[in-house]
Image (cartoon, rainbow over all chains, first blue to last red; front, side):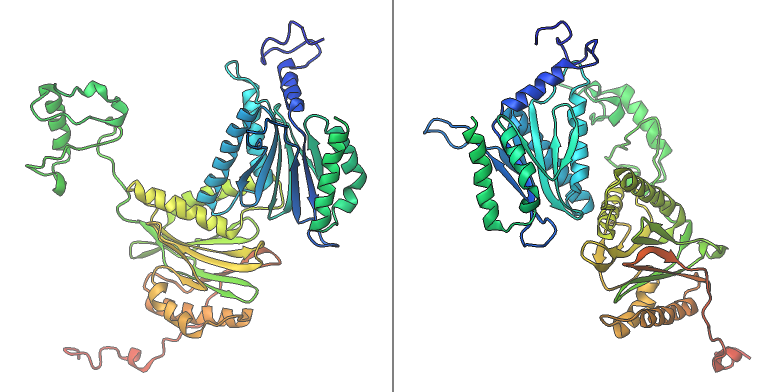
Length: 209
Length: 288
């Protein structure tokens, strides 16, 4: 099924109108550990004012440190990654550079939608060059800016989706279902309850692995 | 080994070659030199070689003086927003040449930028601000640039031009409503990148004539009427003392409620009926 003559490079279209290399890149994201992002509120009966990122890190030998899947981009922006870790590091560098640039010129962090746009454009650029390959990492970009909290899902294809809550990575379907069921209560719970939910979500993942 | 100037790209100009090392190059330099003979610091006996980014252009001229200028801009914060006032005159030296210039510009919904100094440089700045507005529009989210961000951006622009020894000959006043922090914003940027934020600001002659009045009478949480009265008294002081100002003003107001407005031109009442103006030379020595 995956062996066809149209998947040699990212510049070749298949007769069905697909770019197989990009789809393979999306598979790489699915191989990474589960990652969940969700908007919650700090106080009951308030607009969502916080976002939570939870990651399920892979089991590694006892001697090694925990794998890093959440990166801080700015004081109010963070990402959780799933996929090729080295690609993720590159993307965090680019995101941080964008934030620094905006702080230098305008005196404040960029609005999240603008940051997401910039980074998704960069990812798209990788899919249209013969000498490059798509990044093999999917990001959940989450943060708080002047227009409120946002969660963005950035794909290796350069697509950008905005969510209230989202899960990414291997065996994340369970978390997605859970989030869909409980999104309204999640939006209104306090900090302590969020922690409980976090555990529930990851528990679902582990249960189904 | 004689440093060869082919090791430099010609686009960055001549490299440093010691005199006598390359006679052909010396000829070239001498020719260029003669073009700039009258520049004092590059005179006879000067060891400095003229440097230019693009050797084909020859002598590069920078903005040395402004030509068509606007005078002071005054602005005060009050409880619900900011008021800015300036006249509608652009002078050509001493001549009051263009009498209907709007010296303030609305940027987006919440900011007004006013200028003192060279009109054409502000035109260029207007283009940059239009581009900012355009990107905000294309971004299509609910966070357009706040006045503070526009102020920071203009600081960067002015400072960068100053670093290239080609300043934009303007002092800018940026006023607006910060919809994030829900407060009025007022800042000032000069042509060498000096910038500050304050409750009341004046550029040009206004610094000397209006600022003392502001310092004396401005208080926190003024109403709009009080602020307007303060501004108009400052405008009176300016127009009666500044020869490059005319009695035709525009007032701009920015509040939380919505687009800033720039008023129609108006005049203020000036008094010239002072006793000493009736016969000004009466007590002057040598007069009859």
